[in-house]
Image 1 (cartoon, rainbow, N blue to C red):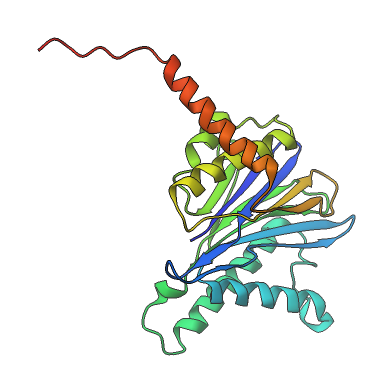
Image 2 (image 1 turned 180 degrees about the vertical axis):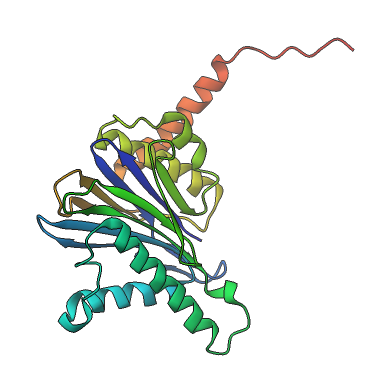
Amino acid sequence: MTYCVGLMLNKGLVFMSDTRTNSGVDNISTFQKMFTWEVPGERSITMMTAGNLATTQSVVSLLHERSKEPGARSPGILEAPSMFQVATMVGNLLKEVISTHAEAGQRADAAFNATIVLGGQVGDGEPRLFLIYPEGNFIEASFDTPFFQIGETKYGRPILVRAYDPDMSFEDAVKLLLVSFDSTIKANLSVSLPLDVHIYRKDSRKNGHVFRIASDDPYFEAVSSGWGIALREAFGQLPEFVLPEA
C-alpha cells in the first residue's frame, strides 16, 4: 500500500510520500513514489504515484524519456504551456499505459490501476495541484479542497481536516503531514518510513527543498511520541460522560 499527500498553501505546495511497497507480509520493498522535473526559472513539476508498481514505473519512465529526448519532447511536460496541459498529458499517458498492460493478456484492468497526485507551477500561472484517476481524467485542488491524498487515506485525513490553515508556514505544514503519516503508519503496516518530501515555494519556478526523512529520524520520533502524549492528555481533559440512570 501507499500513502501520499499534496497540500496547497498560500506560500506554495508541500508534497510527502512514503516508500513502502508490499505484496504480502513477507515481500516488503522500498520504492520511490515521488518524482520531480524542473526547468529552473520557468517551471517545477512534482508527481506522486499510488497503485500498481509496474504501471507507475512505466509512466515515470516514459515521462523521463520524453523529457530527455529532443524528438519526443514536443509535446512534453517540459514544454507544455500550463499545469493544466501537463495534467492532461500525464492523464492520457496513465490511461494509455493501463490499457496497454491490460491488452497484453491479463484478465483484469483493475490489476493495473494507479492514481497520481501532480502539482507545480509553469510560467506565469499559479501553482496548481491535481488528482489524476486511472481513467485519465482529473480534478483540481482549491482552497475549498486544499489537499489530495492517494493510497491509504482514511487514517491520516482527520488531522488534515482539523488543523489545516492556508497561511501556515512550510515548517508547520511538514509537522502536520508528519502527524498524518504517523497516524497512518500506526494503523497500517503497509505504510512506513522513509518519507520523501518536496517543499515548493510559490513563484520560485524551480524545485525547492527535496529531502528524505529516514526511518530513525529523531524529529519524526519526537512528533510521534509527542502526538500520542498530547492525545491522551486531551482525552483526559474532556468532560466526563455520565451514564443515564437505569
